[in-house]
Length: 257
Ligand code: GLU
Image (cartoon, rainbow, N blue to C red):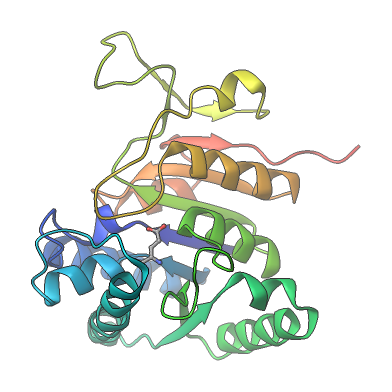
């Protein structure tokens, strides 16, 4: 089974932008174990800008493009260094891939990406993808890693996309405001009613929110891929999801007639 796992900045970093070491260690341990079971795993990891913010000791996430790009350039090194170190402890090898929208839109480049990913998986590695933030300005960026991970999942022919974030799943109302809000465990079709549940943006350090997650669900389910939104607080949730147990919100792929 080929699974794309997207990890949001809120899962990787503390509010300060500094690495959440305990979380990352658990995440890499669980993903290594799933590789050992025989799963093919591609990761899409945010956190470059967030970690750059931490490393450069900025007070908050910058708003202007050059500073964001500079923070990403610093943070991406830190991010991959951390993954490389932690996965190495379990004898797994990581590979970095940085993409922008034009790489996906351009047929030759998309094919090169597909070929490289296939070979990296054959070689037993864990490809870790992020947007190439240092060259992607707003006009050419995919913009958020929820959408990027959905595009990656369809391009690499994944069976499942898992979005790990700081929320448990999709709720019937904002759980911070409405005590009656309940989590929806299964979404059979992305109706206008479901889209209306999108609410606002997520954390201060990341980019996405529920709206980009539902957009990702539309892209993947249309392409015949299931998608799960789950809380990355406890990475063990990945075992449940891959064993088909109830965890987070699962968006069912569209069945072709
Ligand atoms: N590419 C951005 C980063 O690594 C994250 C985008 C997102 O959070 O969706 O910081």
